Length: 401
Image (tube, rainbow, N blue to C red; front, side, top):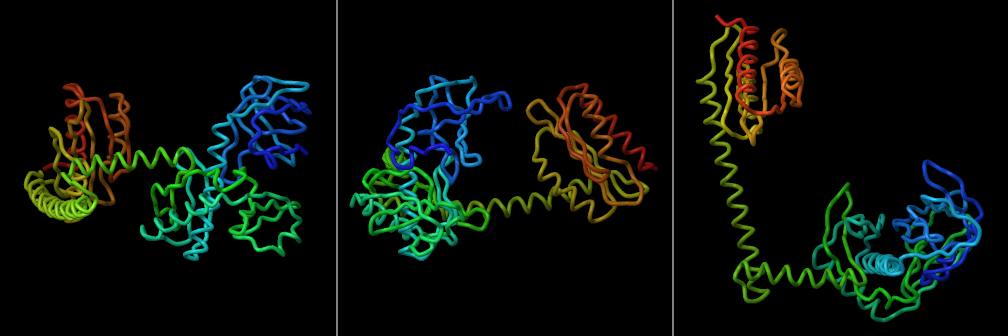
């Protein structure tokens, strides 16, 4: 098994190691060493960046007890390992910061962490139930207190039997050896990641946002230098919004924000009412403009701009009222957006086939079913002439009187 130097020395950024194997694998080389400072991806933490013998490492993962390093070129013998030390430090800060934040939330509000990840989109934890903004700010303040106390952090391996007799936050995944990370007098959690030697190493922690996703409550956070930068960015953003709303202080800003939300809600309600009114008006208009067929009615037009989604709503109403066919081509940014719809019937034109053929001939894309088809084709006089010809062909299939 590869000796995991990062378990006991997470601050070790350079070391020597012996290459045990280097074999080709899917266009790269899989390298196994006798020992490594490279953390393998897993447990919500990405792998380290760096090089082995001057060759950049593209990925690191654990496989059957060994840690595999992927390199574009082979290496052999004794080699020097180097990792991006600043990135490792930030990962250590974020990982330990997550332990502190999760423990504070669990201890204070009784809400356990379901999963935690350090990703480019934003380090985050996912909770079983949501927290209020006030609770999140309280958790942030309590976490900072733990950071400021600079409590020692120790990591050690135990047998499953030993671990079962200890007080541990969260679940323990069965392994031959269980690695527990303990923040002295505050928290103990099963984890294989890298952490600062004391809570003070986290420097700073900031809750940066929340999101409800897949039935859990996600809390985004930042730690270390990233937290300090996020705190500055947030301050600049608030000042900018205060300036835009002509607010001299935060109390005025809160009132202006509430007024803005109420104004938005009123405008959205008004906009919805106008859309409903427009829908009724356009439905009546296209019913009036429809041509009478032996099997119903048909409306076909090339329009100079318009909302295809709105036209689809109009077509759905007309097709539900009585046997109908609505054929629209909308000029938009040098293209024609096609929307063909008809009522369900035992017979009738295959609108999807018409649109698919039209798109194939004119270099567009689209298709659909016999009842509903959409597509986009390049605009221009020739294209519009082709669309008019398709309109006529569909009308003939309806057997106009």
